[in-house]
Length: 298
Image (cartoon, rainbow, N blue to C red):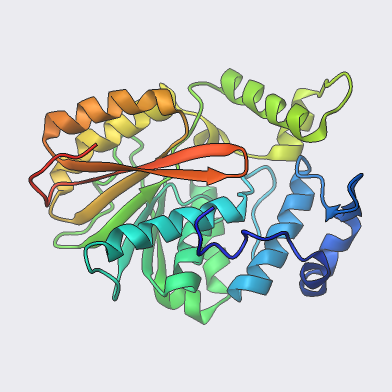
């Protein structure tokens, strides 16, 4: 993980449970004598997140509706730190404003950005329940209300249009796009995760158990064409807002999708770079592009 990520060390479960007593029933000692939780249990991860946000980020009240995506906080923190590095490389380190595309019911990126760097954030989502939940998550804290605004994208075909106001400027945009290309693929992928995490002999889970444990709505997990098509669409639409956003960025889970994105970016003749990220065994990356620089970098 990023060297500034405070979750590089093991979780201190005694401290976390002190912050959130509801985590205690989910904590157990594994075969290696290490206290942990079952990360395939969405309820356990929810209570862990509540404890982490309270202990490390000063957020005492946070929740998500049933069956909505419960994000792993350390990985989300990494994205924020790498954005900070990107901006700092150009001498941008104060009065920063960012745009989170697909903020989700959890509103986790704006919350972390606010608490880590005191950035101003606008979170956007097309799902009305997610918008309501995100607003509820920031309403409980004066600091979050001061730094975060939530907007509803009413047209699913648009990413920036209808959201960015005239003459509005953001130092960056960020996005964790839907990974899968269909509901069937999303279900298969979630089942694979559950099998890997639980190492359950026989490894059979009913479909309703998949959603119960991992959560995630259709708009959070999949879209036609998956992340490759979504990000290509974002790149195309970003050209119309080149003066409104300094750095456009997106997570890219599948390395094989990069070539398609580079082709689209090179066609627009924009500066772009790829930032590699590692969390445990998981490899991911951020693709960032800007219209404000003449050279093209891969």
